[in-house]
Length: 116
Image (cartoon, rainbow, N blue to C red):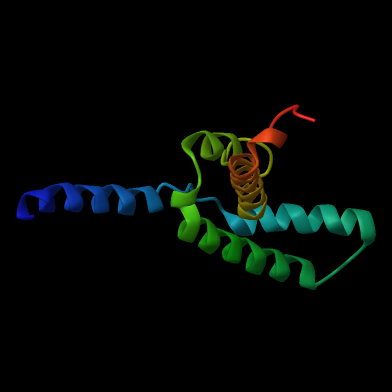
């Protein structure tokens, strides 16, 4: 039993490291750009920036909390701070859709990809 302890410790270290692999972005910069786009389309809205920051922080916390649920390919496809405007909300949505689609295919393989 004690011989397994180093393996368990190593696994826990890997899990802890995986939780910190979420890229960080400047959410205030993202939200300023987002708020400017909203204002240009629909006019001034003082709450836009603050709401954006709150949503981005909540999405970041959720991504960190559930990071281990997402496959490496999903993380690569969904989380790219250099692509588009970096947004935790968008990343979380993409990760959740990929995870849920994968789970649905597992639960009902007869309906997976092109089966009718």
